[in-house]
Amino acid sequence: MSLLQQIEQSVSKIPEKYKNMNEDELRQLIQRAKDTLGDQLFIPGHHYQKDEVIEFADARGDSLELAQKSASTTAKHIVFCGVHFMAETADILTDHDQHVYLPDMRAGCSMADMANINQTEVAWDQLTQLVKGTMIPITYVNSTAAIKAFVGKHGGATITSSNAKDMMKWAFERKEKILFLPDQHLGRNTAYNLGIPLEEMAVWDPILETLNYEGDLDDLKVILWKGHCSVHENFTVPNVYEVRAKHPNMNIIVHPECKREVVALSDDSGSTRHIIETIENSPAGSEWAIGTEMNLVKRLIKENPDQHIISLNPHMCPCLTMNRIDLPHLAWCLDSLKNGEPVNPITVSDQISNDATRALNRMLIK
Image (tube, rainbow, N blue to C red; front, side):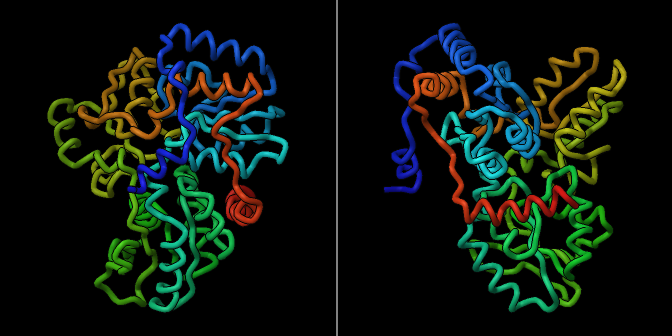
């Protein structure tokens, strides 16, 4: 049996009745559940979710922002419309009497899954013997709770795309070298913006268990995990050239999870929040090609009709795992809660939660 088949069998299956409902029936069922649960329910919705899901969200934002908002509510039930690692972070930050659920347990993140705890422990053991000098691990919040816990145990911290530069400075104030998990592109772009040459960055391949680096190990500053976002990696240099040719007055703004060469050719780069605020604060008639997830790009087009906005990659599709959260799964999750039979709980063990909290707190109280 394949791993995918094992996962499919291990998660709760949505009953057929929800699949067979039309959109109006699903919306009515969701609204009834929200009305019944009242302030005992909080639904955070990530920016990359479909409009049909965002419609019912009590707050929308990035992963950490939504986890913090979940923790600040008095709601007993948190139905997180995002992906698995986001729901884990919400469970870590919320109180023990609050419970987190994911409408579809198959909603994962390919980037987060590119660094598992066994690979990370092997990498740490080998790298601490291979490279000279002290080293500290830092991880993007787009990582599993186990990876956050590993980083917390080893004196490191989490980072977001908004504070990556500040947190990398923080790390260098403590150790000589950084192991950056799990997105090599965010790590490379951040280090480069700090003035670190590409020649002082290496890539650790967790599958082959090899360090890809041709320079002197004494010069090595940043070790990048060989991971990436399957959405943002699909924005390419030819995409940039095509926009420049067809729309010479168009500004290009991309997420730093894009490849270094794409970021270098763009007019601006930054976190999801930075992209949204840049578009919202731009004057009427502004022209933008955006390099980020398609659900968000479409929403920005819809909410800013006075601007000319396109996707940097016209053939881009939405994040497939994010799109697993849909009306039938949300209706099933909420209806089950209303009936006192909750499904798809997300629970992080106390030990992992405690260590992960150390990594998160080092970032939050910096």
